[in-house]
Length: 280
Image (cartoon, rainbow, N blue to C red; front, top):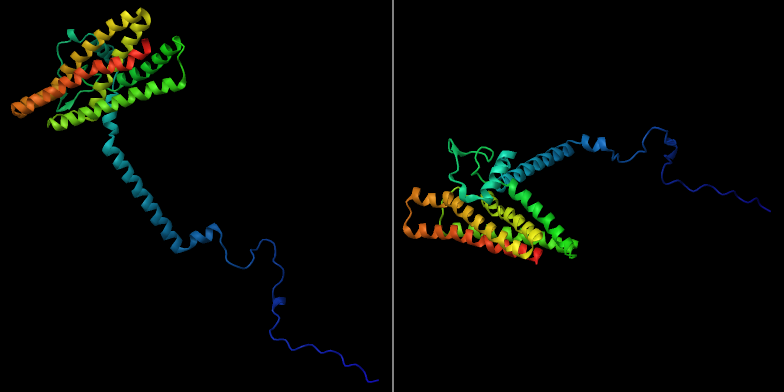
């Protein structure tokens, strides 16, 4: 029987190069694309992209700050909070007893109005802010005494007072614009003058809680008259003075006077609307 021929290996199409590489040694990365952090940022293109992104972010930050300062000037806001204890006590006395106050003219130094701590006639935002917070706390106490307190009711009371403040300021801005008033009254000034009503609201609620309904109406009448007198005398120095200085015609002066009287006459309505529910 003839011997069986042994199988021969088929011809190899490709050279075996696997023996040229040994197992990966410890401490060395496997060959391939290195996506490490250092290599990415070692790329010049990546560096240019990072630098460009940083520049864009810096420019965006500057634009945001510019827009913020455009609508809300930090330095001007600091002016309205430049108060001290003496000013606060004098201002509260003027708000509650404005009939005995004589000089209502705002003082200036080199065409710049003096800060509130230097001039009691200067508007501020410290008293309106603190009076608003005190009013909310007092409203919570009044509702609690009447067994009607709840977070929802207190939140509604705070939001209603804030919304009425915004509406009043916007109405005044619109009235001043339509009456073509050229004065230095700004949004912060109007917020200050409209926010002083919270002092009268606190007095009214306290009078109602201590002396009942009769005490409420007595303090409401006093606070309303005092606030109207204060608004007329304060805004008169800001609005009607521009009529005299600019020599506007009689129609414009009359329209500006109506804006002043309308702002003053609106105060008792707000006082009653925001305090009656807390006492009755």
